[in-house]
Length: 159
Image 1 (cartoon, one colour):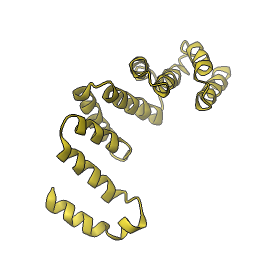
Image 2 (spheres, rainbow, N blue to C red):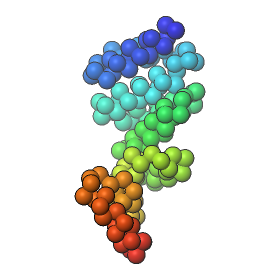
Image 3 (tube, rainbow, N blue to C red):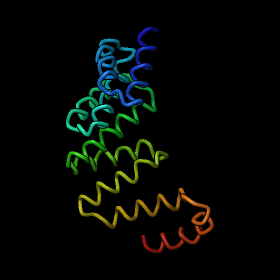
Image 4 (spheres, rainbow, N blue to C red):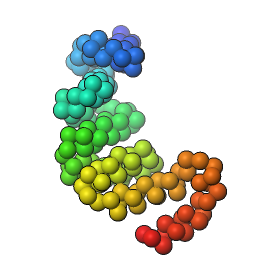
């Protein structure tokens, strides 16, 4: 119970911008199997928040070797893919994004980041296809919703 309280406190510290203090607590929780996965994940996020992606990468990988709930597992996989892309390891990132879309087809937040990866790989056609599909399936405004049917028709004609 004590570790559970500490992890929530450490997460609150990170979310409040106190990443150094948060990491001190999180590093202390790595030895507990009950909190190790979340601790690794939040350490990775803290390094990402600081723009230190090369350090974050290892902690995402460590998190994925631990017991994680479904949402935390997704977040660790997504963080790993995004961080890999940021580090310029585009072919590896593409594979990670493809795996994410297969495992979590309902998680539409993957698509814009995957599209960024594809653009960096000079594959704008596929990036555009993904983004148009996202807009059609998840219209951001009522104005687009009104034209959803027409957009689906045009989208099918183009792709």
